[in-house]
Length: 94
Image 1 (cartoon, rainbow, N blue to C red):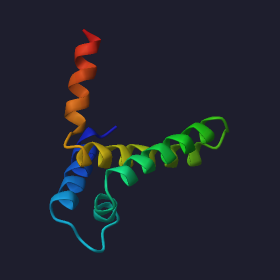
Image 2: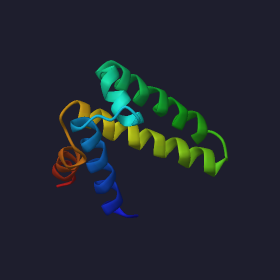
Image 3: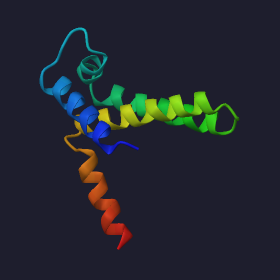
């Protein structure tokens, strides 16, 4: 797994937040507000659960990717990062 890619993705999401673009799906999510972003995370989470019950690896992994992407968008919309969440996980692991 390339954590560097997640860092790059998170930076791109931050850039879309800080420098909105009319052609960017990510910027359009931020423009719709926190409620819409949170709703998308909920929708994607439900889709992951549904696909987890089946045996279609491709659908499950695609929904998992959608969930992770929208989760990172939600973190940015709230002013947080994956590092903030990781720190909590590290502390819990002690």
